[in-house]
Amino acid sequence: MNQIPPLDLGLQYQSIAAEVEAAVRDVMASGRYIGGTAVEAFEAQFAAYTGTSECVACASGTDALYLALRALNVGPGDEAIAPSFTFMATAEAISLVGATPVFVDIEADSFNLDVSQIEAAITPKTKAIIVVHLFGQAADMTRLMAIADTHGLAVIEDCAQATGALWHSKKVGSIGKIGCFSFFPTKNLGAFGDGGAVTTNDAHLAAHIRVLKDHGATKRYYHEFIGINSRLDAIQAAILQVKLRHLDDWNTNRRQVAANYHQLLQPLAGVIPPRETPGGVSVWNQYTIRLQCQDPNRDNGEFRDQIRHHLQASGVSSTVYYPLPLHQQPVYRHLGYTPGSHKVAEQVAQEVLSLPMYPEISPEQQQQVVGELQNILVQAPGHL
Ligand SMILES: *Cc1c(COP(=O)(O)O)cnc(C)c1O
Image 1 (cartoon, rainbow, N blue to C red):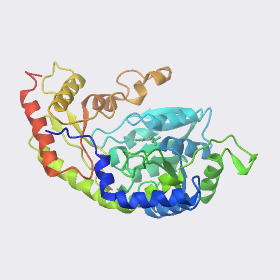
Image 2: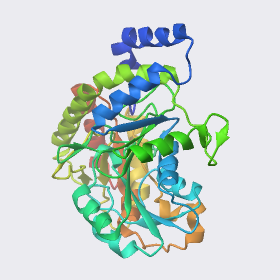
Image 3: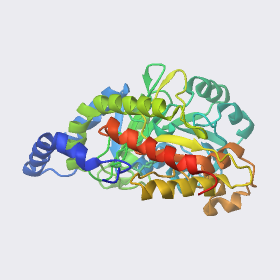
Image 4: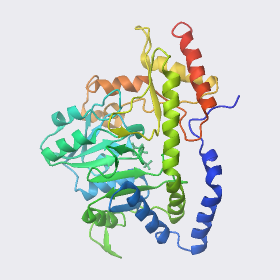
């Protein structure tokens, strides 16, 4: 039996090969490999898709976050609030601008920032909140924006995993001050390499980000700021234009895949399927279940890792996003968070398992995933 992969980008390529190859050939023949019409057209199309007036393309999602914080003048001495359960890049960008991340715990059923805990984390040094729409699901932007407005804080949306997701019919990346996107190949809109973008409705901020991503130059060879070199390649922009035309169909397929999983998993004891937050439409970058061991004497993380191992042996790939919350990372030891300070993130990190999720996965493959999981769970805890 063939191994079911976590995702299958080769299969997706087959369905768009002719369009992609024509677009890439056009760029190669144009002789314009940095900037130019491919990048400008993609920026315009992505702004329109997101429902913002401005889009600035850059080299990665990490750069997008870094540039957003720089543009908002978040720097040394400042604090920025971020969820404790997300990919490292969210907090890393805060550290890279010289500010300090202040971690807030998450909600177990959405994996997103627990908005009710934000106010307790605000200090006179707080400048911004980075909210992450984790695994493709929008965080509660209504409550979050109300808190941010009350305290005069800028909101950056980390949309790396949620391109196309909605919160009350608005696209993520159009609700806060700045939206940050990644086009890493495994994201919902993935390039054939690295890429990223910033979206905003603030023309002044967008202009400032354009300067910062181009070595801080306001005019060529005249530098007003210390910036960086962060560009989306023309070839990647051309590929992304093609893929953007298919994104809504792919996201619709992901929603169907999630609905199938949800139904198949209902009868399984000890498995908590992910829950879609009312008010949001998830684009399911990941389908992440939680596994809870019925034996109170066993460690949940070890139980989960063994199930993952058995799944792998029976032909099903799964992934742990993320095994260690950010407030417990070695690099943030100096911040002094004690065990139990972010209980939900710490618990969830022991329980999560992301199942194969991509638009092209077949119902038969999904049945196999859940069938193997069921076989393994029936033997637990005695035989694992
Ligand atoms: C992928 C990701 C990023 C970083 O994007 P890159 O393009 O890989 O730099 C940031 N935040 C989250 C939540 C991500 O998943």
